[in-house]
Image 1: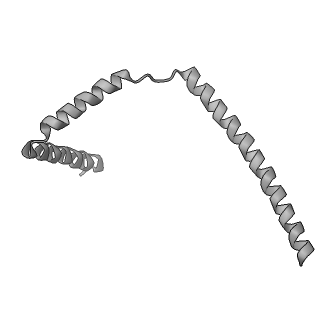
Image 2 (image 1 turned 135 degrees about the vertical axis):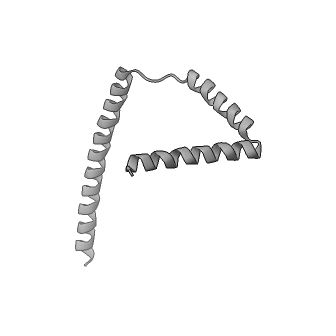
Image 3 (image 1 turned 120 degrees about the horizontal axis):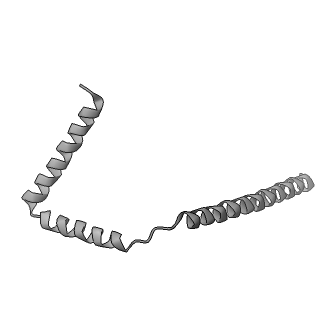
Length: 90
């Protein structure tokens, strides 16, 4: 038997079991209401344009590089200060 077929059958069986459980426990109406609300909220979502995504990505990359450089310099200075401190008192 094909692996994809087995996985598909497992997914279908799991969804069928979930549906049966929802129906038997009386939670089907709540689940339907929840999904209806999710659909309603998803209609309100505004997704960014490609230009906005590229712009914010550039800002994040530049900020990350600046902070990485700052932390590298701070680490270097702290390390040199520590070595000098140990050299004086040892």
